[in-house]
Amino acid sequence: MGFICGFSIATGAAARLLSGYDSYGNICGQKNVKVEGIVNSGLDLTHRKYVFFLDPCNIDLVHQKIKSIALCVSACPRKELKTLADIQNFAETNGSTLCSYELQPSEYTTDPRAAKLCPKFPVPESAPIPFFHRCAPVNISCYAKFAEALITFVSDSSVLHRLISGVMTSKEIIMGLCLLSLVLSMILMIIIRYISRVLVWILTILVILGSLGGTGVLWWLYAKQRMSLETQVAKDNLQALLIYAIAATVFTVILFLIMLIMRKRVALTIALFHVAGKVFIHLPLLVFQPFWTFFVLILFWTYWIAVLLFLGTTGSPVPNEEGFVEFRMAGPLKYMWWYHVVGLIWISEFILACQQMTVAGAVVTYYFTREKRNLPFTPILASVNRLVCYHLGTVAKGSFIITLVKIPRMILMYIHTQLKGKENACARCMLKACICCLWCLEKCLTYLNQNAYTATAINSTNFCTSAKDAFVILVENALRVAAINTVGDFMLFLGKVLIVCSTGLAGIMLLNYQRDYTIWVLPLIIVCLFAFLVAHCFLSIYEMVVDVLFLCFAIDTKYNDGSPGREFYMDKVLMEFVENSRKSMKEAGRGGGAEGRELKPMASGASSS
Image 1 (spheres, one colour):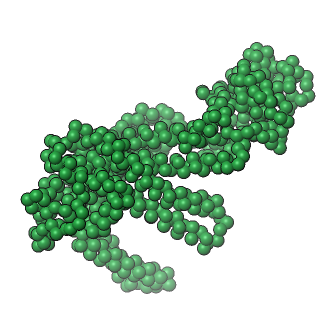
Image 2 (cartoon, rainbow, N blue to C red; image 1 turned 120 degrees about the vertical axis):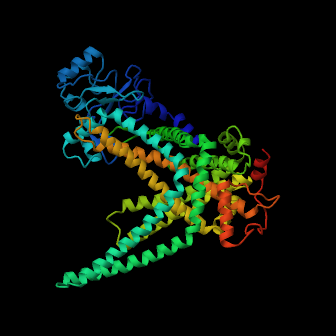
Image 3 (cartoon, rainbow, N blue to C red; image 1 turned 60 degrees about the vertical axis):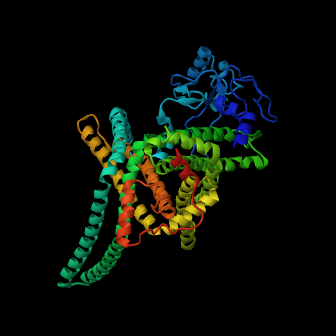
């Protein structure tokens, strides 16, 4: 990717992108080299620093470009010009000629070629785009056709104007509500620790009661309608009710059996959520991990887009059918942007994996330190240091595996989009099945990768060894994993819903006192989307911490049994869970008979600290 960036800058793409160029291959603001077979090329345009389009509103939506002759001018027209006399007066006053190079300002009103070589009337008021030296119309209504393609749901422009004015006039309220969602997310992360036990059992009871109630209502409706069968429609409805009631009964029985089997595993979820709350108290910098990750991603995406823009103007000047110049790359170099896209996916996944490794390292240090007062001053920074010094290869390999699965899925999605309405039903079904399978595989690998990073933080082993160790632990604790991922994820989802609803309700109450707003839809949508994004970022860190704690707990119970010399590292809450499990299952020392290689370095190192 560094080579692609250097190549795009070295071949002059940066100058063409920033300074702009006209339809004859001349870069504005500098002397140019003659292009063979192209008139008006090789001009000295040192004093003409801005690109001006003769018809800036003629936009080709298919090829995503302006279908107009481009010229280099000294200044953009700062007011609307309606006649050739106005253009001539502008050229004489400002020294900026808006017609083609072969016409002199004195010929604008007399030469018959002016109708083709001068701008389309009226010439809209324009202003230069900062840093990119292009004259852009000030009035965006010039791009009405483009706007219609983007906003197809707006048939009345007044509706769009009211929506935008509602956002602009309520920007202070929007910013305040976004800040409120941030505060609510942080508060929720703290109080989950104290309400996790009550919340889990309330959810469990509500799900059971809801299933029983729904099944009962269906059977009641079936019994009631069975009494009066007068038409064929009533008989069909009765048959449908019977099917629904039977399906609901089967579902309720299965759900009840699952709850019965996993009721003891739910206690582990409660204990892990309680300990996760303590982790955030001892490691408060964990809360800010989403901010740093988002900031790094924004920096990388900005760099990636800039290089992509440079690539778009890289190449050699080639005459097109209309006699103007286009820049095209020849040979294998024209496929560089494909590699650039792969780099976008891989490095984005790499940055996210670095966050997972950082969180895993800090939580592992917390878990395997017996005396919490002996924790490093900044476990997060210590984890980042270990990542940079020892584990970048592990993270790169894990993120590359995700990239290998994500790219085929994106290709299939692109093919499905392009063939929409053209392929037959069988092909459409096969494509969707392949996309679905790749999506499931990607999710499974992402979860396995996250646990592999935790095993790496504990053992300092390479990626493949860590992934194998993590997979064995997860398989041995499959029911516990299922309980944590169902109950825990549902709790966190309800937390997100709570934050979005609270923020939206506050928004409605605040906007209710503002009589200037005619439409609240867009401000509320913006606020609710931001609230969900913030809640997701914070609670995903919470979910990550719970997953890391579970793997540490599973390893702790596998290789330690609480006897002298093999004491547990776990928190008192988890210790109580283990003791209760032993009493109920009557299997004292269940974890003491484990054999094989112990997962070692982080545990011993943390205890000695």
